[in-house]
Length: 234
Length: 262
Image (spheres, rainbow over the protein chains, first blue to last red):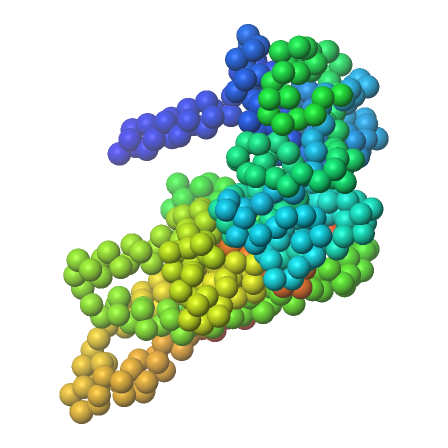
């Protein structure tokens, strides 16, 4: 009986330690909107990368709480600035890509959305990102600048959950990133007035050594990959 | 009357202490980070007051729905045995196991605008669940129902059917028996079940955000507000968490107290 208890303890202890122990691979913190790039970046680089994917502000929060990483990529300038202000990054961040705000419509366009002004209709089910996250800040900026008051039925906590609700037809339309529209195959409505609303992606090294992920993303193959996924290039 | 205290077997002491530490340390961590001096200001901002109101409406409605739907179901489960009852019991437990986001997505597939049944609910009753307070209530009820049903069912099983049989023997109809015999003896368990399901509904996040989205004053509950606040204003998120913690402690203490002094 005692031997069996000891055996179980040994098994559980082993599992716990193997689960906690990490390899010597690099750790990259990247915003949710870069999820679709990680496989290609892994293929292009020889050594393993452990990706930590979350909203930009949450990534900075994790760094502030003591998480370790080699490179930090944020989906907007404000969040990177907060990392700089807290001395969480070691070098000057560089702009690696940009992401445009687009008006995406549900498959089949059930709400018959044709232009930005249609988003003021209370009869449609519409979504934007919450103003706490970068895509929501951008949407709020666009609404204020263009004088269009979107009759939103939901302000989603991240662009991905918003994009998925448009994809499955629960929402008629919404303002999302060009990359998410491209990735999910959502139709978008071209409106040149939205072109100015772009968020910049910045990469900075956390420990001071230049990151090969940043080097790859600024190289020609890296830039091709970014453009292919709907990002704009600096 | 409580049992006389017995010495705790030694091998149980350390794991029990570890369990207490696991449960208590996060609470200590939260309280230590709480912005005590600005707590009241943060909790009385218009956004938070809106979220408190939405959360109260949603969680209380969900608890009431659990009572209205869960009590009959618990009775059926406790008084029947067989293959179908066993299958039904597993169905009741599923929301406890499913990640709430998956539960919410499944609810959308069934009751959403493009859902299997959602179209008909919309056509017949004029109720659309996505992005409405009603949707948030349905999501919260979905995750909270198992807590209510299992509490009542185990109590019904413990009491056995002998009282029911006695009532039937003196000529009471099944409905009379249910109302005058079963319900009064169940009262403490109903309080406990309501407490548990209400607490679960109050803390619900994943299914709510999936089904109902997040709009201030309509569907943005306290947990959703907390999740958003973590992005920009973690101090407010901690303040809201302290509020949720205190409210839950009060309600659980009051209602569980009644249950324990049964």
